[in-house]
Each structure stands twice: as C-alpha cells, then as structure tokens.
Image (cartoon, rainbow, N blue to C red; front, side):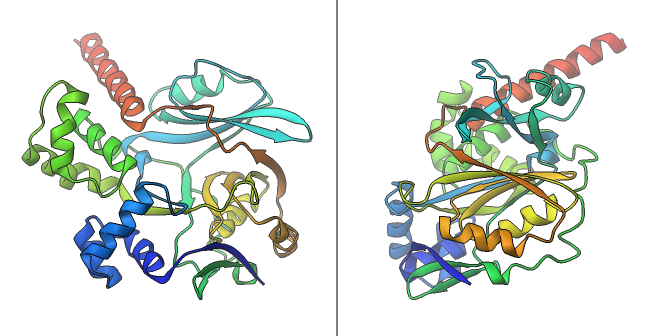
Amino acid sequence: MLFQFVSLNEPTWRCVRAAEESLSISELASKSGLDGYEVSKILKQIKNQSLGIRLSFEARLEKAGILNIAVISRRDLEEVPYLQAKRMLRVLGQKLFLYSGLVPLEGSAVEEWLSMFEDSVLFVRAFERLWWKTSTPATVYHENQVYGNIEAIKITERFRMQPELPLRKELELDEVDVLLLGFKQRWPFVSLREIEKESEKYLGRRVSHQVLSYHFRNHVLKLWAGNRVWLYADAQQVPYRLLYLEGRDAPAVARALVQLPWFHTAYIDIGKAVVSGQPPCASMPHLYRVLGDLDVDAVEFAMEVSISRWVPLFGLLSKIVKREEAVARSGEVSGK
C-alpha cells in the first residue's frame, strides 16, 4: 500500500540520490548525470532550506569512542553535559523532554550521564544508528512524488539480530578532526579551502589546506558512513512523532521503519529502540497491522518541531576531546 509523502521533481530526486555517496559536487554531478550548473542550483536551494530537504555528513562516532544516547525524561534540566539537542514531547496530555547526547564510552561517563535523570527514565543507547536511504525497497518514486510502500517492508532474520556493542575505539580525534566534522555536519559539500579560511576563528590559528586534507583522508573518512537525505513534509499537516519501542523485536521493527521515507532516524539498543520522523497519519494503522505480530510494545509521542536547545557539533566534540586529553594526561602523571 502506497502513501504519498513529498513532491520532488526528477532532477532534484536524481541529485539527492547521488548525494548519499558523493564527497564533492563534481562527483555528485557525475553520479546523477546532471550538469554541474544544475547540481549547484539544486544544492543552493537545499542549503537555503527552500525544498524541504536537508543533507548531512554522517560520521560513525562510536568508532571514535563516542556514543549517541536518547533519553525521554519528565525533568526539565537546564545544564546537561554532552547534550546535542533537547526537544519537547507530548503524550496523553503530559509534557516530557527528549535529550539527545554524545557521550564518551570510556570510563563511567555513560552511567554518570544517565544518573542525571529519574530512575524510571526511558533511554536508548545507539549501539546501532540507522537512517532512511533513497534506495530502500519501501521507497517508491513515481511522477515527481515520493511514496512509502508499507507492504514492501520485510522483516528478515538479519533484522532480528540484536545490535553489537562497541568493542574498542578505532580512532583518536584531535582538534583538526573536530573542526572538519563540525563544518561537514553543517554542509557536506563544504570545501577544504572554505574550512581553511574559517579555521582561525575556531582554533585560534590557521590550519593549512595540506593539513586539513591529511586529516580528512586519514581520519574523518574512516568515520564517514555516507551523506544522509532528510525529507520534510509540511509540519502543520504531518506532525513529527517519536516511537519508543521495547521488546525482543524492537531492533527489527526499528530497522524496518527506516525503510520508509518519512522516518528519519533510528537509535537501536538491546531490546529497545527509538525512531523519529513524520509518518502520514493515514499510514499508522496499516503500519501497526504489518508489524502487529512481532514481540514489541510501542509508545507514540508527538514531538515539537522546534528544538529547545541545540549544541553545535564542533563545540560538543571539542569539549569531549579536551576531556579525553585531560584524562590521558592525568593517567600519565599518576603512572609515573
């Protein structure tokens, strides 16, 4: 069963599909079959937020020892370390808060972060973080419309696997890596020349193109998981929702939901998950029917469009890197 989500003309659809695996505008033009001028025009419209599309450079920060965590809490906290975003949620007339954090895996940082909230808090550690991709079987593009096909969702045995816990840190970030990640998150096609020009403002010194290129090739690209395409409908007609899933099949359901173009993100923990997006209201009964035989309980929250608080990635990662450097120095001193 098809449900229409958003309208996109064919050149824009070709552009965003190619953007998922492209590192430069020239590469994007080659993969999409569009000329450079048309690609630049479409990207400018996306960057100016005039198309209801967002592009983001996605990094597997767990490889650098940093874990995404989502917490649903009744507490309205002003100061939360490692906070990336805070949003308001509503369910059955109650007001709650969604805290999204990036927390170091080393030491007791995760336990300390969770201890800030009430004992009954709902939390999901993103041992696996997924998002919608344009090539999913449940996504249909036809005559300038993007549809979700709920009947195309298939729960395979691979979907039923519990996520693997991060075992070890593969990469140590430094301030240049953080600078690159901060700029790339804001816009995936920002050039190293542009970052070089802005580097002194952020680091207090100018970082050369050669140094940036080395760090990008040898560090940042090892974390890159592709670019993500976010499609947005009119929030007045299609409200934002957050689904909290719990049960043996919660990971499978989360993996299935992000095959649909209106679900943006899934955080998957052992036996639980959260999925956010803009599912069309008419699709929800059919979705529950398709997934109804699985071992999962779902709580549906309405999510506010506006973000109560947002911490830029550069500032957040800078604090984490400085903390890790301080911990390493203290360990060296105590070991002498």
